[in-house]
Image (cartoon, rainbow, N blue to C red; front, side, top):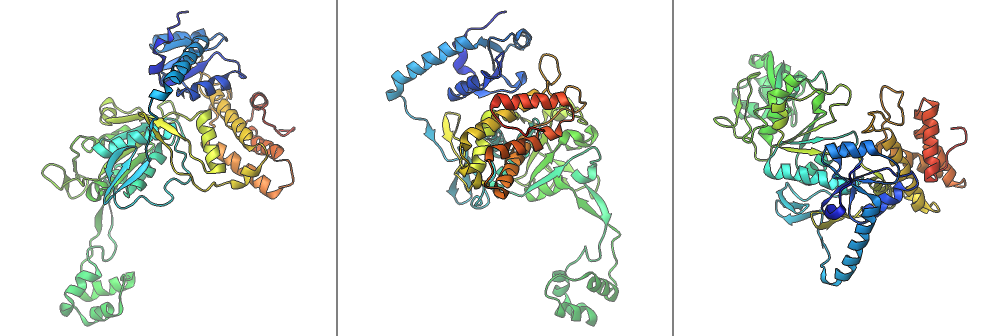
Length: 499
């Protein structure tokens, strides 16, 4: 088995850890994280594979086939030790990395996000950071979204569920004061949702109270009386009376523009969620909108044209999309020409133990993590914790660390293994288990509720009740529950005896 030299370790970013005993892996991950390296959950997202003493030759072989470096942990320890000594010697000569505000309002209609200056509509709203954990993965995805907003590239985010794909775009739109039009696509989505369709016309769709008032002297007495008594919107009955009195003919149908024409016209951020659930022939209709110079002809309606020779595309119009990997059930494979038009394409990764712990600490203590990105240090402002009662639980820091480690190990066990293509947890199920941030946060919320209702009981045992309810109770197979109990025991977490 050929192993590469760690000489280029400093250039690596994301590390896949394999071949360690369950008791060793958390310490290895912690040491790598403390040295500035990020953890990859799959081989596809890794720049480097770190191997322990447990045999993992198949992973090594796959990594070599994909030209991914493989280095034993013992050699990395020596490298990190040498780097630490060198860093200590040079510490006095090295400047501390620059701390930069995540969001900096520059005055007027300009704002800086991750150091990139963007036009905005007003000051970023208060409470912009509440509920969102600005960890390393979120900021990397945000950097891609900022790039799309700055240059106007169509931007797509592909990744597993609960990888903050949608949250990044919604947050950016809110920070810039833009209207974000979000459309969830599915197998029944049609052209009408995207482009538009004819709908039955309502009485008075083609006129309003202002247009009638402007020519009041030419109207019938009953119409003038209605206008004198009305200060706001006309009711359906009033419109019907006016139509009858004035002999106004009613249009049978009108064209209602979809989200794309509205975005082109008004400068919206258009977000198409779950884009690969829609039929490919529906998506291909957007090819002209995805060009470097967007254009659209409303052939379904009145042939209004945007782009060259037509109406100008609003300068603030941006197009975003999110999608799960093609192996998710019901997803369509996008054509090469359609996928290639998404110039700014970002692969979002599932969070790991470090990100889970950062989110738990945000909920309990209101503290945001410190992240180094592009040589700069970012940290979102602290916010009011959503579950502050848990901060008074004895040993809460250790319990949060164990809960994050337990959740990360369950998530990893339920993920398809690179070697045999099967998860180690839920192997007999047609649909694999999904352990995302949603479940982790729900566990914390349930724990908080139990502690609040029974403050005199042991909070550690109450955490065990919450874990049993939200993790073990969802597992039908006895061997899966047994495996989950073993993982909980390995991380030092309690569980209910009868779970």
